[in-house]
Length: 132
View 1 (cartoon, one colour):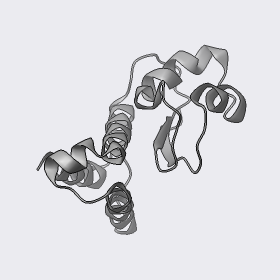
View 2: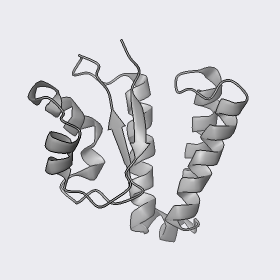
View 3: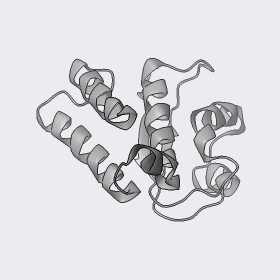
């Protein structure tokens, strides 16, 4: 079974066009895709938002998928400004760069994959930063 992954969207896209025609998510997998990307609907997908992908057959979410969904939701909230304003955080671009740097550094030292001990520690630090 392959592992779930996420990518950063690069342009404004209609959710359903993107899911059905660009990514060509099969009809049998659309419910799972919708579940993993609930943070994107019903709004247009904006540049900088995180899209979560998986080809896992189960309708239940794995711990890795849950971690990616939380990251994607936090990015969406930071882009809307609600979390940034409420918590005094920097702009969405800075938050996104911070996420990339944190996960990049963890990967550079050999353990940044989600589900690994270093990935779990890095994710905890990243999410605790959002909660400050």
